[in-house]
Length: 244
Image 1: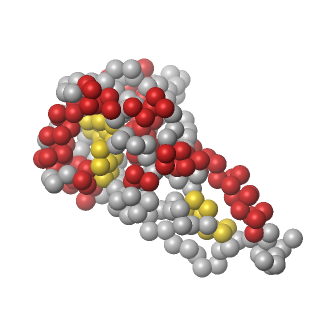
Image 2 (image 1 turned 135 degrees about the vertical axis):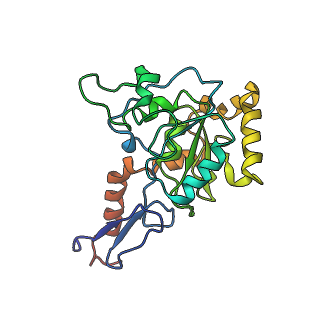
């Protein structure tokens, strides 16, 4: 056996190797070991209840508490065109961070402890037909939990982020906002889609078939499965000083 391997992980946008590692872990398929955001690890300690009914009057859910200027501006301009609820610190229009609990009391995770705004995020968004998901940084393969929260909640994500997002999601499961000529055109499409049950249902057709296509690989390479896959990578490499 060779010497122990040096392992470094960076899941942030614009990932960078340390220059000293033997195995580099990040979100891109080109990295030594890939770790996507699609697993359940990012959902720990939350209420997973999914509503069977979607609101028809308020179409879009938005929640962000890191008010980055570019993301905030895009969200503000789009949401001005659509009926929505904003639950986070940014552009909040519901009257507070825990307002979702009075609107959807079934989303309370634990009646014996004080709620945190993220505890009910998943449950609350499940009441909306659409969830606005905007990445902090728009870069290839950087597809974070923001998108997967919406898919897991049974909603249709309106997504702004990685240009190759279709490498990570089920077919016909999201609305890629970057493909529209303007935010006005996007808002018009969302309103039309919301009023067309057949067309809207097509965005959920993949759910009848389970995990499909690229989404299967994305789930298989999530951070949930990282320990076993990392062990396999270490075993294949055989140690830092092992002979090739």
